[in-house]
Image (tube, rainbow, N blue to C red):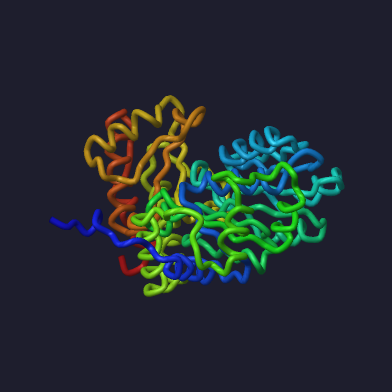
Length: 368
């Protein structure tokens, strides 16, 4: 018997190209868009290894764990790296980036994460892009967590390499990603003898075999399920309206932040300033003497479907992340998450006020 998810006809080059066109529309970009057949770490590493190398000096902005990962890749490909490290509880500023560029005029590559879902902060890309553009460096942006949750305008912001993934605010799978590539970025990669070629990491291969060939023959068989899911995500965002989708994520973030403060029990927003808090996920700091991993385990024991996770690595004991993105950017998911966290805190002897939390959510998210 046939199965709709198994017995699929081949994905045509024309349909693949149409999905690329719709990604370009989502990003409001006129740059080339390449959809890569893997999770977003694939194009992120490809961008770094293509755009930097021996002889390059990179400014790597670190506002969370992904910035740390980029620094490792940059060093591995032979670039000199200047790390600009900022507290995970805040955001980098354009002034800080400008100072780093002035102190190191040799910098020709800048890597930045737009929104760090792992730490709950978001960075002011428009202002930073202006500074980077004035300096003349190539600008790579990890927008995997921000796309669909907050404004993302790579052309207007001077972003040369903008990487997105479908698995967060777009509400899709993790197995497909995309990158918009400026003309300057193509020139840099073509001039870099160490840029990946004849490699799954290679953006240049996609340009030579797909874009320059008029998008008539795919370099290899595409991941059909992931491509169809990405197409469905784009259709849903187009039908709903990107502004509506972004407003829903912003409301979810504001409601979690307000509800957590009203809940009490020593829970507080991890990112100090609300303007630096990412709409895709809200991070919360647990009270002293309380273990975040244990609290999350207790909350999930009551409802395993909640979008809750403890922080990673060194943050596992102090941070809780509420992943209110995609289908979880709803008042119901926010209320249920706060209710469960309140019950878990109460189980440790902390005094909480779940009614106050619910009222705060309602006040912050009118009509719900």
